[in-house]
Length: 69
Image (cartoon, rainbow, N blue to C red; front, side, top):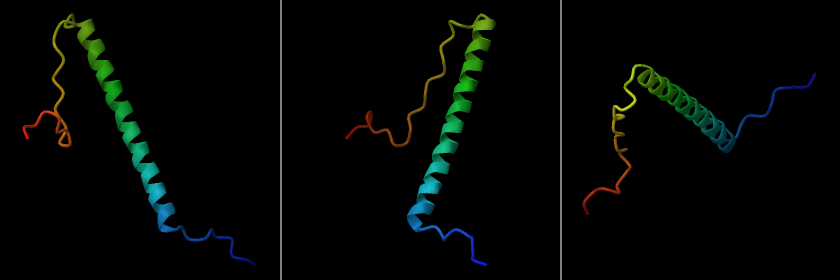
């Protein structure tokens, strides 16, 4: 009887799997955020608060476009 287990994964294969899992989690988080924002927008429209300004987006830590040199 031969060993039918797959060969062990290389570091590159493990890294690729981890990258794909990370991207899948990020995509799921973005979809959930979009769904939540749509629900908030609909709730504002239903309650007559459509003219209320949306909360300002916070600058990300990596954004250096508005920083003094």
